Image 1 (spheres, helix red, strand yellow):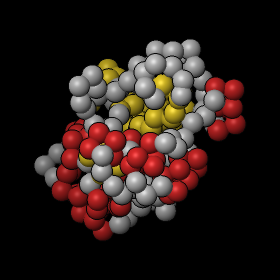
Image 2 (cartoon, rainbow, N blue to C red; image 1 turned 45 degrees about the vertical axis):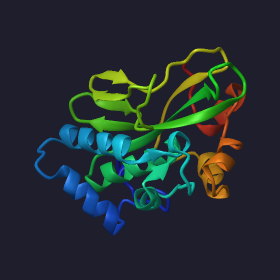
Image 3 (cartoon, rainbow, N blue to C red; image 1 turned 90 degrees about the vertical axis):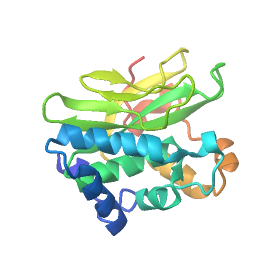
Length: 202
């Protein structure tokens, strides 16, 4: 589990502001499952999704997501992983390939998390932020993600990665505005998924 607890440049879980918030969220809770739930709900509800709120800047590093209180789904997953790891709870990264407008092509990656819970093992959660038509919850062992697969070219990749995909990090770091990012959302075709370490599961 070590690699799912590690600090990195993007998942800077040793940053003082991350550590302080992680401790504050965890206070009063005994079990890692209870702490994980609080971390998930905090990121889901307190960090504004960049597109939903049309907020700048585009964030990537976990501490920047916390500082600016905004991020795309990928960035929110970076902060959630950092808070969990700061509380010694293993956390990884998951992706789906989804239609951008729910009409078919074009497609993009959607990022969320998996958390290792002692009672059930890996449990996937999506902290992108709820809105009309999106109701992601923390209710193990039942999984309740934000989006379901609807089209043949969409995919639910079952891989749980210890670090965010480089193409996701590069896309976030290349943009400064929410609408600029919207035009350049990262994507992985189904044919190339294996080369990114993403196992296919329709």
